[in-house]
Image (cartoon, rainbow, N blue to C red; front, side):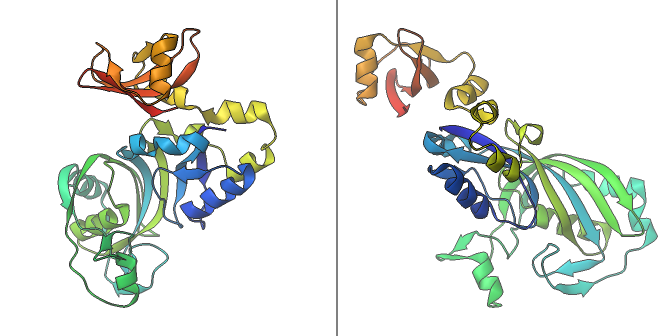
Length: 293
């Protein structure tokens, strides 16, 4: 089985746990397009078989999340899993709807963001969370991110929480965003809940649970319905880009030999003379090369 299956990851398991479980179910090579925190839920695109070769084409996708921000407390991990290291008052005026909306709007656009210490970013060969666990302070350089939109969903004054939806660029840390929003409101806070609803062209409405996948591992109709094949993916990404090769050129393509074509530069779906899908090729400087077969 080659392609992508969209999994709705449950809370409490890592992305690596999901990969291992699916690898056990199908006995295939399995990967993913980007980790999701263990305490987060939501969309996790899983690459299976030859689909693992697609990771290169899917790493820069934008994301959408549903977030619950808890105000008044700061944790060492910036989420609900950590220890509370600071408490601060949350005034009623801070939770005024107009004030919250204005504060959220402040973060729309391109900006620099400092990643949280409890993250997998490597500095001098070690992940940041390894330093954090040993209470070693290291200099973390800010990164360029972009927040496309933030929409307020709910304000719970009793629980002192703010719920919002955010669309953002790859590399955005929602835990850091939550801390920054809390600071903008005049207090401290941490990410209480996180649910990823979109990764690039993939939406959570098309996802299935791990239990559903395991229950239907021998149900071919179910698997084909939920499998995004390599061909289907590139039809979505580059609908018009397809090339039909005659037998001679197809053999060159399959053998990894580059040859001249007059098509514009870009990625193409490759078909044989019988319109059978063969794989993915790329045209650069007027020459077609093999990428995925």
